[in-house]
Length: 266
Image 1 (cartoon, one colour):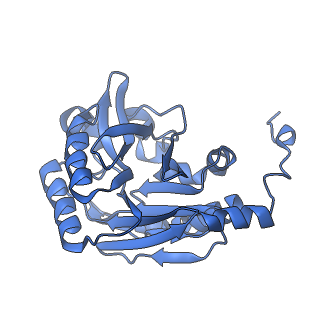
Image 2 (tube, helix red, strand yellow):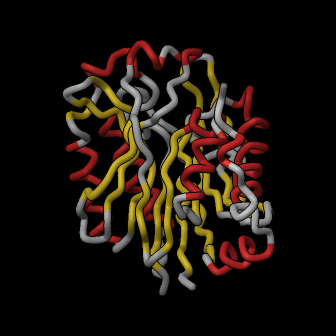
């Protein structure tokens, strides 16, 4: 079964400053990169390009994520890696979207996922358009399912990804320190209940009066934490083996026992 190497880039963000954030990512890769025999999937935080400035999307947004696609495409070719997850503030014909991107090692922007669940607490429903579908991507035969931040609070969304075959659930986030225990508990829960790997990449630093808690994580199908970041800037490689998902699902056949006909709301 395929082994993948994940690169979790837990970085601080400068609000509205795409140039500085691009330079920060470029430097973190240059300072920390090592080659591997395995395909590497790089995961970034939520809206890593300009930070959480959704109320000024017309000023700071990236039309169809073209600028981010070009930048990540160059890095993907240089390091021969994948970028999966890590969302940007994308401007679309329908409005601004919180868009997670997929860029392959050839530098091609091949897929995206728009955040489906918008959090009213942060006025996302006022400034963003929500996505209407799930996005799966296969890397060396391993199925990855993309989600963003608040999506984590909807286990039914992750269950559908898993029923459809996801072996790794990827979350990009700007999760505040005040609710960081929720983040850690729910990431582990999504791994255990779906017998799959979970990788969550959260930002660090402070915007306004809000500190963001880091604690990026990689968790295996049994709920074992393979990596948990602190609350500062970090770069971490973690290897995962999809054979572990297969073994867990063969041992605890939770998907065979599902009764979807009982789960419908009246």
